[in-house]
Image (tube, rainbow, N blue to C red):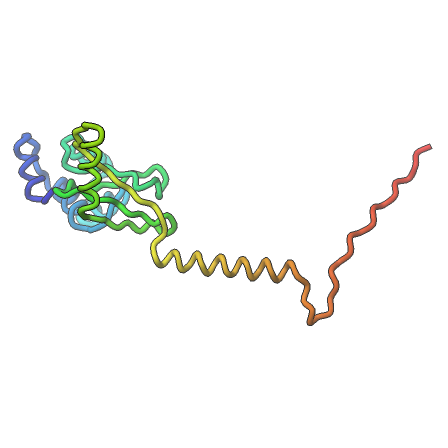
Length: 182
C-alpha cells in the first residue's frame, strides 16, 4: 500500500497524522528493510530525539489493527521478534536465509496460481495469504560448503595417523587389576 493511501486511510478514520507517526510510517515504507519495533524506534529516534518507545508500540498497534501494516515473524529468525511492512497491493512471499537472516521478497504468477488452486480445490475464499520460504542464500551455501569441507578434512586428519611421521596409533591401555580385599 502506498504511503499516500495509508495517510488517506488514517485521515478517513479520524486519526491525526502527527509528525512522529509520519516518521514511523516513512521508515516502515521506505527503508526497504523489514524492521522490528526496537530497530524502528532507534531509527525514528535519530530523526526525532523526543520520540519514545511507547509511541512506537502504540502506533504499530494502531496501524496493524487498521490493516495498514502487516506484522511478520519471518520464520522466527530473530527469535520472538516481529517485523513490520506496509501492506502492498500485490501479494508476495518472503524468502529468508536461515543463516544470515537476509530477506528477499518474491512476486510472481506462481503465488497467484497457488491462491486460485486453493480457492478452487477447497471452495475457499482467500482473503489473506502469507508465504515464507526458509533456506540458504547463495553466499551462505558457499560458506556452508566450505565448512563441511573443513570438517571433513579435520576429521580425516585426526582419524588417520600420518604415515610420513611413522607414528603408530596408540594402543589401548590394558585394564588394571584390582587388589583383592581380604
